[in-house]
Length: 178
Image 1 (cartoon, rainbow, N blue to C red):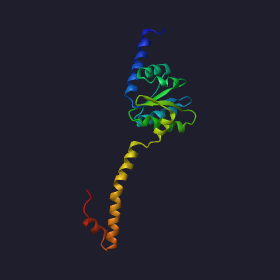
Image 2 (image 1 turned 135 degrees about the horizontal axis):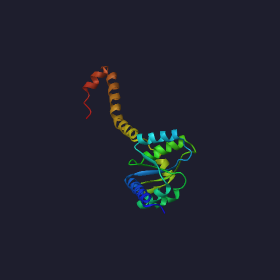
Image 3 (image 1 turned 30 degrees about the vertical axis):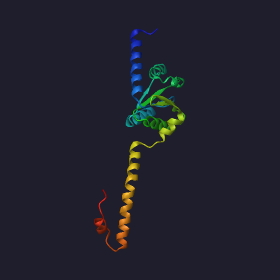
Image 4 (image 1 turned 90 degrees about the horizontal axis):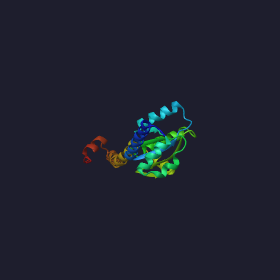
């Protein structure tokens, strides 16, 4: 039987894990066996840059935290070496962990995860990982919105050149886009 001090420390860890899991939009459980210190350091750096909270966690403590949050279905994944990646962005932990799993083929495996308080399978995590980063998506939307304006400018230039007027004059005479 552990002494009272050790027991209270473990209860505090479980309480902190429970709180982090409840606040996180998504999480990914990973088996990290076989990675080197350098690889782990690089992974942690990528996680920090991606806004992902990454930590190695004891299976028993994580099991208690999952049971506190209603994620009991994930208990079967808690064997061997386990780490947990959490984030507010539902795509970030999946993307970072999937990229790293590809880099370290065989040494680093995704076990499963959760999103919005519900367990998700490996296929869901892989599909989340394939979604482009938010800045890329924003650039794609902006490009889509600007395409008609760019097309209009090209058409006006062609009309002006066809009529023999310099392109700058045609652009100046055209009504401004609102």
